[in-house]
Image 1 (cartoon, one colour):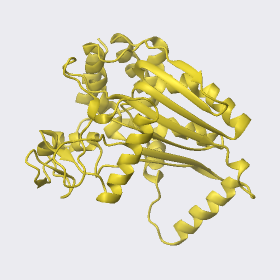
Image 2: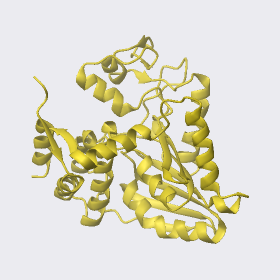
Image 3: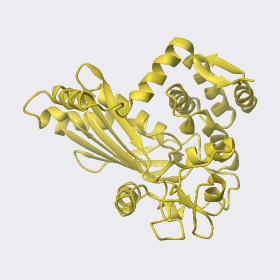
Length: 337
């Protein structure tokens, strides 16, 4: 029998998620930002960072691990450098609060760097950057996480999945925005595979004894994920840890400790974001050059480019509604009280 699916509008899902956040101690302003972010992930088919995450958000809030009412502190550390203390709150509201200052710095100098600490990032990174690309800016961001990734040959997790995202405007097309973990698989996708009883590709991770495994439960139960690409992936995840934690003043992934807050899931670390005005460097219109390159890639025979699948899912959801299993929707409604 096929799964009983509902098709809900983005507005309906946002409204429900906002009520869940507010029912669990999040201020109305922060709840609206978080709900829009989570609903957008679900709309675009990023299921590992959509409503799947709501149980973790709620558990972290109820445990007192994260402050849903936090008001960030924003400090200019130079004409192009912003320091943001999220005050143990979620990253997205802190970024929203800092956005006017970031845009002003880009307009004045052509580049802006935002270093955030004391923040909980529990979502995809592309929603942080797509609005900047819509404004014609090139941007990139990195964030650390909870330790669940071992270096090749290692036994003890040191890194988070440490994602990296990049966004650029493209003339005549939606922005090119990509977002990927520097581990072989994101933690969320690993957890979804375990929930659905699926194996993961060999080489994804190790079990608690250090043996390679394709069992997601073994990876999650005392094992660990591996960086993608062996030692090249290790270099990437090390770079992210240094940029998102050491440079920002955030916690290293290995320092995230939930022991005093049972049930908490949102990692409290840091995030680095860089925004660039490409017109300061290009001799031609930058977005046109981006289009020319992407056209060349498509002509080469590439079947799919980054963000293609996400935009296709977005178009389907806008036309038909966001597909959600009825049982899952009912579980969400229960979280709203």
